[in-house]
Amino acid sequence: MASVKDLIVNGDLLKCDQGKSTGAEIAVTSNQKVKRNGKAVANADDDTAIVNIPVFGECKILTASAGTSVTCSHQIEQSDWVNQSPNVKVKTHKALLKSSKLSCLVGGFITYTTKT
Image (tube, rainbow, N blue to C red; front, side):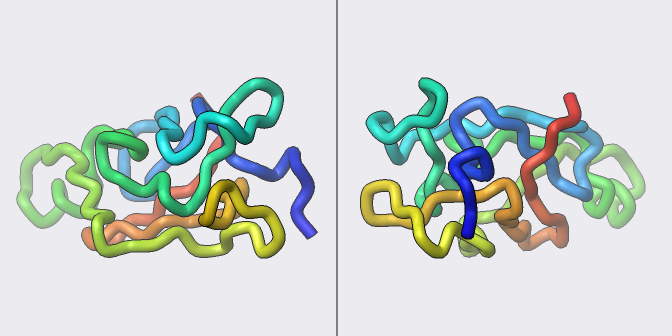
C-alpha cells in the first residue's frame, strides 16, 4: 500500500532516461484542491507534453539517429502512466506515485527523480 509520502506533487522532479536533463518539474493542472504539504497531488490526467511534462534537453535516441543534436520532443500523447496508486484517487483518476512511469514513443521512460 502506498503512503502519502510516495505521491508525486506539483514541482516534483521528473527525468527521461533518454534525455540529457537531470530533472525538470512536473506541473500539476488536473487538481488544485487535494494537496500534500501544500502542493497539489498529481494524477494520471497530468500527462500532457509541455503543459504537465517538461522537455528533457537533448534526446539521446533522436540525436543518435540524426547524427546531430536533437531536442527532446517527448511523444507521450498516446501513452498512459503505469504503476499508478491502486488505492488513492484524485478527482476521478488514480494518483501518481514516485514509482509511476510514462513511456515516450521515441523510446524513453519518464520517471520521478530527486536529482537536480
